[in-house]
Length: 417
Image 1 (cartoon, helix red, strand yellow):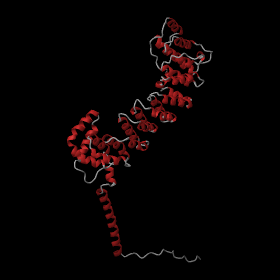
Image 2 (spheres, rainbow, N blue to C red):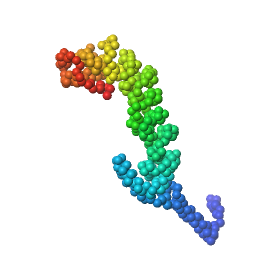
Image 3 (cartoon, rainbow, N blue to C red):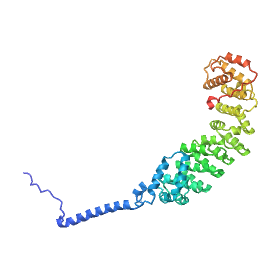
Image 4 (cartoon, rainbow, N blue to C red):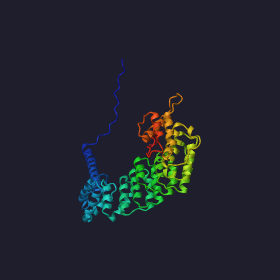
């Protein structure tokens, strides 16, 4: 027989509250929930600085003239041409008293969706009272307001060098602010060297648009004080190409020429080649031309020596070729021939004809040899007005008739374009 089963144990139940006691508690909880929700909605709508208003840029009570301002901002946004915008601002001076209050109201809220348009209009209308809210916006943490605040404030009350310089660290990570800062520098008739150094520092900005803007806006004539800074940036993988191009804008002086020579002396071959492509103004000076000849006649890489010869070609240096030049590699003889041609020497043309007539030793030509032969044929074609693929003897017959180098401008060699 099986033992008798025991009844299952049940957990002890709490005594249920009587219905009369449960109802008031439920009603109280429901009332509390509803009251909290209503309070949150009222706060969201009524509090002027609530997230809702920060997102929409609106407050419960808008200033008088706000709708007029919005319509004018829309109209100005559709006006593209600078002359039309200038005439537009002149016409609106009649209603500037009506527009000022809503403009200042918007400018006091950097998060407003129309802050940028309002800042531009305030500057165009010359509203001096806008300077204070614009300064506050420039110090705010609202990234969208920084660039328009800087542009507008600089138009109303031009910032001094120290104020602009203080913005450089923030501009280093803000593309729009960096471009606005460069525009401020470019608006100065004579920017100080310190201000230009701050602008040159933005060549290291990761945004290509900022670097392109720097090249476009920086003065075509840069002071010698930025030479050391530009030379130091040559190694920078981001700023290097722009720095090399800007070096051409620094007028040669005893100080800058020496700095250039010292920097090239410690640069690697690739850097030297890149710099030589942009220093025509410096190659006009005797010390730099001597450096170019030393590089051309040295034992460095062929591209570097070719770049040095092309630099001498661009300044038409009349110095004779060094001894042993006839034994140079074909690419260097091609560049040496170009140099002789632009300085009026017929032996340069003869060298080109010899290059295309060389039969070699049976080995297939190297890339450099092919480039030299192709360049020689293109140069002869331009000088002789013959087809580039003309027979060598045809070029020899033409050369025999010459008494002087034809007055023809050579095209830049393909590798240097």
